[in-house]
Image (cartoon, rainbow, N blue to C red; front, side):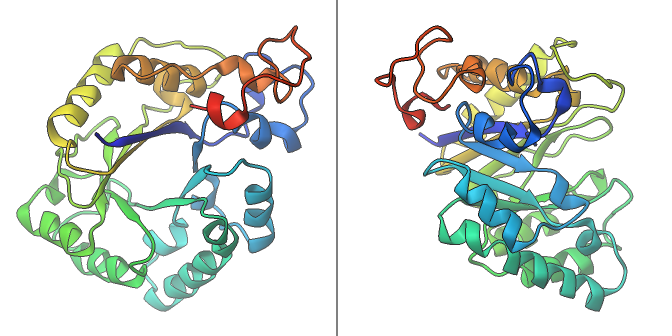
Length: 281
């Protein structure tokens, strides 16, 4: 039975103050409160700007033992045409992850390519990047164009042990290939929603289809990572709760983000509540 790691794509959203974080929560407390509920997060911001080691060390310090960060590789690596410049960015990015690796809090890295990235013209770049990211890093690859759904792509991914991201995103549907020892799924949605404080879309059918993919195709893997952004249903934390319910897993206690550490309920101030590790999803 695979181990599920379910969480959101990011944690720093002002719209979550009120429905998830308590009113008045400063941004500096968001991650700590998020980690009371979930034990993994996908870092979306690293796609736009690579973090430095100071920042990743702070992340490691503010999260409990066993927490995992999955990070997108910077777009300067995946989207740029200058291999030398991209290699330099990648080297700095990987070096900055050292505090997370030392704390055993680093999940998979994600190479996210745009829909304009197509086979076979993009194959040399993909093959190079699969090699450039050292084997000690778990790697997932998000491809968004149907030209990639051919045996040669699967062979490349299998050769590296990289997971093909099972994305739910408009315009494409990746095949349910298992090409490594883990599966990585992303519930992305479109960009029509602009407020992220509540569920605004019913996507139960998509959640059920992902459940069936996990059940039918991913039985042999050791871990399944599943992340939802706000755009998918309107509110990331509640979307993850809905996914957990669909999978038949215990629902995350979203209320823990608003309580002090150790509280069973908002009215409980006793110190003997369950530990953060026990209650986190």
